[in-house]
Length: 510
Image (cartoon, rainbow, N blue to C red):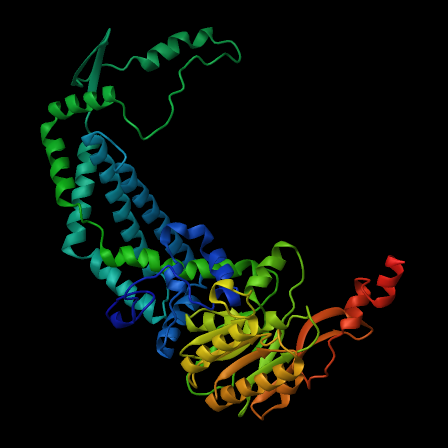
């Protein structure tokens, strides 16, 4: 096996040029909130470009699913975290070097960084040898790592590092301080009287006494006096310090590029799995969806909006799950019902599920089958933009026209409350025109609308309705179910709840 990347099995599938710009639909689907939360604690890895890049191949998605599932092994996950921690420490040392002034101080920290790197590699080789790996990604990586650890390049680096560390640890010297002068000479086996002095004065100690010893701050810095002392020590031991100079000059490119990339890329999986932990503890379900680029019979059971769930989780509020499915020639979910009933959240969920599945991640839900789309489009309500001199209706028409011109039969379109700025008659007329074009394209779509007539326009449309508590229509259940649109907006119950009916207003104004 040839290892290219823990994110992409084939070299040609990798990201050609990383971008920090999220796809256009991210804000509408609240995917920006999800990715922000996932990557918040791992800013140093710059993971967002990985989450901004969809996969267009089912096998590439399965490659990631295998790795994500393998990391469910707690032992393996801890092994990778341990490796990442060592690599992070190594990078901190290298960053520190750029801030230091003195030659041997820099070289000492460089030696420490390389030693940690060598330990990280050897420890991971050992740890992975004890794990029964099954995913293509980790099997190929283990093989690459083992070959690298046994290569002449690494073994010579390891041997040289250990030899140099051992040589430096054997250096002993004495300081003779008189006034403002310091004399440095080799240690000549002088007797250390520290223990004798402590023993002599031990009999004078009575109970707890004040400690008069100076507290020297622990720091990585070196002042000019210490630097000059070190320069004098180097003159006393020229051979070992010459070896240190040559070591640093020769091994500036010691870091293996593939391991460096792996250390960053594997955080894509770890960050996502860590983000899901709190939801799983709360009893919410996640699954690895079946992916198809041919069958459009999609479904998800017990799914939910991951962005909203994160918000509700912090507020200790309950999270409502919903199901959906499309079978046979069904392609379009038309969602209607009362305001504030969860319709937009349902539409976002559909989009989130397909996007997260398209980058190889587990998705909210007990079981799912999803479609591998070529492009995902959203049309959500936006404020009027005075710069384009278009009214809201015209802007809606221009935007949906652009989407329909770009969409293919393999695209997904998610629309939320389109044509709300016009009359009901015009909304029905325009809605049917757009719906017929979507039906003609035979693509998957979710359409949140107040126009109930769209729900029964074709055999490809499926009506879903947000429900309320029967005995109290003002209370929303946030459950979206398959059933014919009933034409009820429950406006009166909302008005009564907020004391905005004619009688309530009349009573307050009188």
